[in-house]
Image 1 (cartoon, one colour):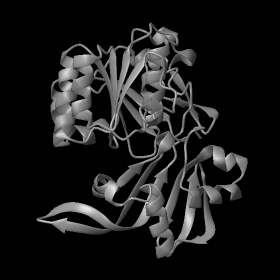
Image 2 (spheres, rainbow, N blue to C red):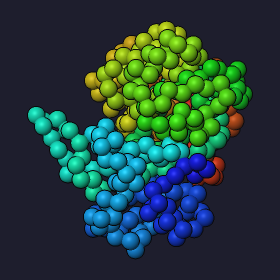
Image 3 (cartoon, helix red, strand yellow):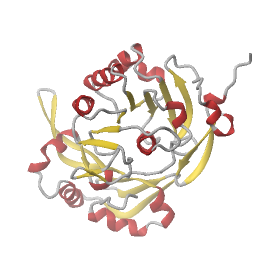
Image 4 (cartoon, rainbow, N blue to C red):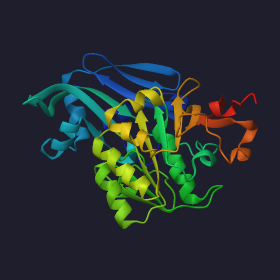
Amino acid sequence: MADTAKLPNLLEALLGELTARERETLTELRVRINAPIQALGYGWERRFSTIADRPLCEDLLSELCGHSLYAAEQELKNGYFTLSGGYRAGFCGRAVVANGKLLRIAEPTFFCLRIPREIKGAARELLPLVYGKSTLLISPPGCGKTTLLRDLARSMSKGEGVAPVNVCIADERSELAGCTLGEPSLDVGERTDVIDGCPKAEAIMLLLRAMSPGAVFTDEIGKQEDAEAILDCAKAGVAVYASAHGDNPESVRKRPVLRKLFEEGAFKRYVLLSKRNGPGTIEGVLNEYLKPAEDENESNINDAGFLPVCAGGSEIRQKTLLAVRRAD
């Protein structure tokens, strides 16, 4: 875990019950009212003896919002808090709705705290395939999209095996860089500029106008304005690296928000991720036509198309669609 990350005190106290391996591979903490607090990691689950009653949920909410519900009005509407070090605490419970729109979660009683995982080198073998090419990472939640995006940004910024690039990060949820008071707590490289906590569409356009980026990174495209900003960025000749939830490119392509990005060819690479062999398993690298990528840098890849990726501190090897050769 990031050294500067800080969990709420009542959850931090429970981590003393975990083994060293469990702490290193912890991915989520789940708090559900009237149920045991739960910890989940790569291939394991632990249920603590502590039961989350209503006072515990109220204390947890108070810690998450810095003991000021008034100051947390926007977070209560969005359904998540971002904590020091890149932790994100999502929550739900009793909602207050007016005219069919959510005003806030009035009584959060279910929480999901996602643990940031910094794995340097996770994107090493992916980098030659996507360097200089706008890329969309696609997977269901929990498959390592953010981890790979962060390491791609770090690698490009530091020039690890490639020419260094001025990287800009539009970090709406403070998960890529884990900023605290504008200072990244996670390693995103020395040639990297971050705009933190700003809606990604506005952030991307600000970065494009003001910071002369060579590559722009952002996470989880979800709104029409996000897609429009990414398209403008790509048309300006700046490579964009982003992520989206989905099982495959076709399912993402059907989403109205993303359809135009496909039609306009905004992305030149699509990386398919799963957690079949652990989070970060690369199932395929496709070009803009959703065909297996034929990359001019393929000779730089070790083991003729096998992409080593890291999961839980150990290296795994997953054969990807790139390794498939045409019969002719």
